[in-house]
Image (cartoon, rainbow, N blue to C red):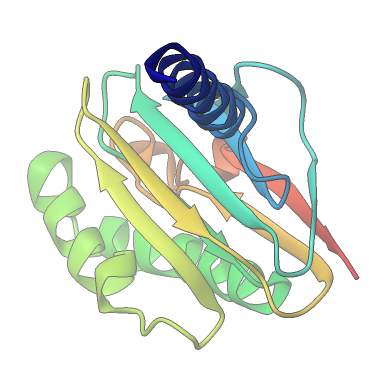
Length: 179
C-alpha cells in the first residue's frame, strides 16, 4: 500500500513540475516582449525591424537599454502628438538660438520648454521613459484602440546647435496596433 502511495505521490509531483515548467517556458500568448536599444540617433530593435505590429489589448513589454552617449527618451505618442512635438522642438530651438543661447544653457532652456516631462499622459502621450547613457529599464504598455503610434525621442543633446532634436535625426519608429 505504501509503495502505491509513494508512486501516486511521485506521479503527482512530476505532473505538477511539468505543468509549472510549461507556464515558465511558454509565456502567456497575449504578451509580446521586445528588446530595444536607444542609440545616437536611432532605435534598434534587437530581434527584428520596425514597425512593430501588435494587437489591441495585448501586453507589450519593452526591455530598453540606452547604448548611446546622450540622454534618450522612449516615448509612445499619437500621430498628432508626434507632429506637435516635432514642430515645437524646431520652433523652440530656433527661438533659443536667436536669443544667443548655446551649449548647456540652450539644452537646459530647451528641456524646460519641450521636455516630455511636462506633457500629460493621456493627451496623446501614451508612455514616456527617459534613460541616461548606460541605463536600462523595462516597461509595459497595452492599447485599447487600433491605429499607428510613434516611438520617439525629442531630446536635443548633440543636435541642438543644428536646430534639431533626436527625432529629427531619425529617432522615430512606428508601432502599429491592429484591432
